[in-house]
Length: 118
Image 1 (tube, helix red, strand yellow):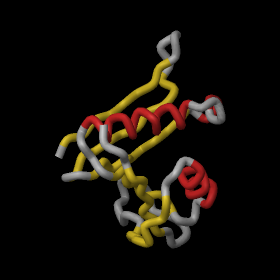
Image 2 (cartoon, one colour):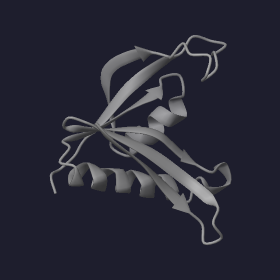
Image 3 (tube, one colour):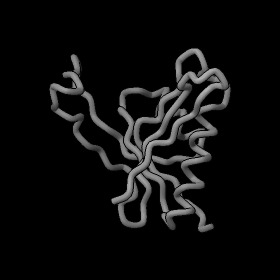
Image 4 (spheres, one colour):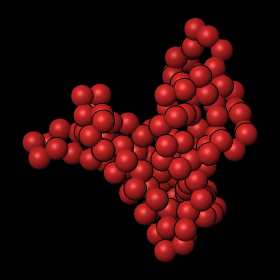
């Protein structure tokens, strides 16, 4: 497995956004896509996703996959608008005190996007 953390910085040295990738066989798994709240809506997330697709092609991956909290409809919609589709696979939310315990039952939705070769 190969993993990488891609970051985006302002000219003043402020971290604006990041995304973590992990190569698993012929798939790139995307995790922790995050943009500073006051910078959202400026295309930074889309730029990080474009960089993700570029990296997937460089690694020879056929798909980009991610999981999102299924109950966060705004996130599901965000990824759908960017070409991701629901694979139908659901995973339980991690039961790990290090990430906090949800107050309501949550599940993770897997989404994917085909990646054209380089």
